[in-house]
Structures are given as C-alpha cells and as structure tokens.
Length: 423
Image 1 (cartoon, rainbow, N blue to C red):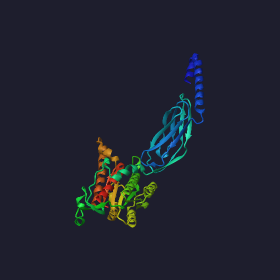
Image 2: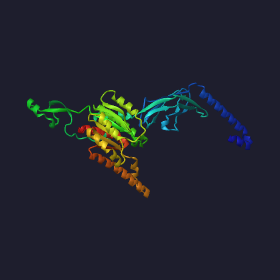
Image 3: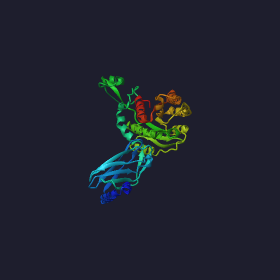
Image 4: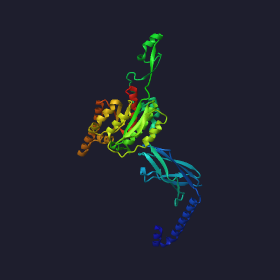
C-alpha cells in the first residue's frame, strides 16, 4: 500500500510496484498450496497424567508429528483450564521434515477439583510465513487435582529409614524403654547393657538381654480445621490445602511405621471422617476423602470437635491438629476444649507463621509509617511464640512452622514422639 501511494507521486515506479504485488500474490498462493495440499500435515497429541498433584509442578507433554516434506514453524496454543487464568499461553518450535518432537510444559494447580482442558491448537507456517494453517486436537480433556501425592512419594522411603538429616532433622534421644517386649536372647557385642536380664543370666550362666520392638498399631489422627482461619493463602495455596497435603503424607508415614492412620475435618461440624485403621486400602480411602474436603470457611466450633472426639475415639491416640491462631485471645477462647482433648489423647497443635511479615521485619524502616508497620509485624510474630509457650504450660505440644515446611516439621514431630515413647 505504501509503495502504491509512492508510485502515485513517482509514476515511473508504478510498473515495479505491480510486479511486486504479482509476486506477493504468487507466493501467497504457493504458500497456501504447500500448507493445505497435505490433509494431515501436522498431528498433535496432548499427553496428560492421570491426576494432578496439588501445589506441585505437574508435567504436561505434547507429542508433535510433522508429515510435511519441508521445514515448518509451529505455534502451540493449548487451552489450559480456567483455574490457571493464563491468557498468553504459546509455545513456538521449528520442526524438521517428516520428524517428530515432544514438548513439555508444567502446571502448578493450587486448588483441588476437576481441571478441564479445551482444544489443542497448532498453527503451522512454512518458510514463506505468509499463511498459517490451524490444526485442532484433543477437545475437552479433564484431569482431577488430588492432594499432593508427589510429596507422599518424596518422603516415603526417607521416613522408613528415619534418614531425614539432609532436610535439617536432628536425631532424637530415646528416653528409657517405651517399647514392646519381644524376646530374651544371648548378649552380643553392641547390645545395650541396661537391657541385661539378670534372672535369665543366672539360669543360663551367660549374659542374656531383653529384646524390644517398637510399639505398633497406635492410632494417629490428622484433624484438619477447615474454618475461616485456614483460608489465608501463601504462594497461591490456602493453609487448608497445605494441611491436607501434610495430612496425606503423615498418614502414609504412620502406616509405614505400622501405626493406624485416620483423619477428620471440622468447622461448624465434624465430617470427612476416616477411622484410624491399618489396612491395605487405607491410603486410597484417605486420599479420596481429602480430595473431597469442601468448606465455606465458617467459624470453627471447637466444642463440637471436643464432643465428637470424646464420644467416638476411645483409645488414646496421637492427635495432629492443623489450625491457626493469630493472637493469644483467639487461643484462650479455644483452650478449654484443647485441654479437654489433651486429657485423654496426645495432642499436637500445628499452626503457622505468617511468612509475609518476614520482609517487613527484616527491611530497615525509612519512614514513620514503615516504623509503625515494622513494630506491628514484630508484635504479631512475638505473639505466635507466646502461643507456643502458653500451650506448653498446659502440657500441649505444638509446632509453629511456615507453610512451606509444614510437611517435614510434622514428620519430624511424629518421629520424635515415636522415639521418645510419649504415646
């Protein structure tokens, strides 16, 4: 168009402009023939996992086959689920003639539920780049997002061997012998001298020692508060989902340690109950139950939790309570119910640091407003530590952790309790 305008000013160039227009039309027709002559020039397949792991990077693969006999450039626009709110998705690649390629990208869901994919659109251009042909595949695929089973696999073998040193976990000194008696055997070098059975030694005229095994089949319940205080998000994931992911992992660890694992969730009422058992199908039952945990984030009713636990759980159990307290006043309102549960069970209250305050606390204050913000942030952080001391006064164990370290800190506490024989 610019050249035609210029040729109106300079008439001698009009013939050249017409030749260029003819060349453009010719190349466009040739490009169209090249791209549309083949019925199936490019074939694409979206390869999805059976389910997504919530809060983790999940791979999605796209297999591309190029049936053209020349090089092409492709632009892949995958209609990913609306939960991700991605508006500018696009992957560009060059493909050799008659070749195949596999492209991978990752998605990090932060909500449980069903994720529906739309169409897989592949736009193909030739070396001329004048025409683009669209191929569409894989319409309406769905992938459910479950609690983080990737974390479950990550900590599975580690927990069995107690080999958690690379994660900053320290050895726990065992206090006394809080184990089940197994047998009396002959003393061998390295046995604990405190386990010598003097009566058996006198009868056999050689050193005999008592052999113990770890106590097993102890109920371990993950109690998840799904009330208003658990709605706070960190890195896109709510505290509720962090707790659900940790509950899944600790249930698997407990079963590997030959204990019984169970869960329950509560807000206005207690629901999503899985009775602590040790059976092969228990993990699948827990996974499906955690997947179906839904809430409107009502105000939490601890009195209802206390009543249900007292009525339905008769054996002394380890109770891992995932909740959150921001102030001492909020703790004092629920403290009578926590003390009531702790009378009959070993209660561990797990609540969260507000990591968003760390930046405010560590940054130097340059204005009066920043100084006020810094003091208030330090006050909130200090009050969290006061809550730990307040719980300790009443013999209630607690874990104050960041959301990112929740899983490993919970495993560490469980292994500590097992090693010290507190349950």
